[in-house]
Image 1 (cartoon, rainbow, N blue to C red):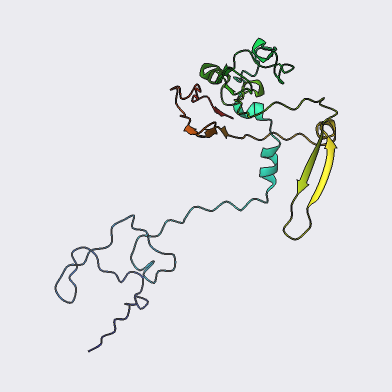
Image 2 (cartoon, rainbow, N blue to C red):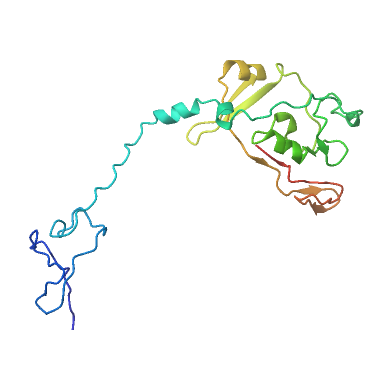
Length: 228
């Protein structure tokens, strides 16, 4: 045997026809009005039939046309992060430990912690200095993960090649000097998060490098290998 239950319709009720407290229904049971504060749909058929009025929902903000985003992008990041930034760092110098290597010409921050003590340079900044400088890490204090010598060249002489990939077009290459990049294009600052993850170095075999402060195979990878 199949049965079908149809939803009850209250469209035939008229305003003021709902029973009140103390009034008896047809089956002898008392009927009570609904409690105040019960939300009801705006299109409910019982709305206004002796029930408390529905509070109008708050008006929604009209969608923006994107002009606000453009204004936010033009704000100076120094003002966003406050005036407490400490971007001044110690002057870079040449390290005596680089003498006799291909990196003897490079000047580096003297506070950098060398992890291997030999060429090529792998280093991290002291954690206390990162905490001092705050959210933005100065470029001179970024950690270094390196496997070879730094290419020697003049800033304005070095020529870089940029490759543009497109799924429907051929790859295009554009070569330009570094001075062109700094002089002919707009400067845009974006925050990036750099993390030196767990790595495996190759010597005679693979060994795992820990991310904490324990020494593993003459390397000390600290938590300061995390820069913004």
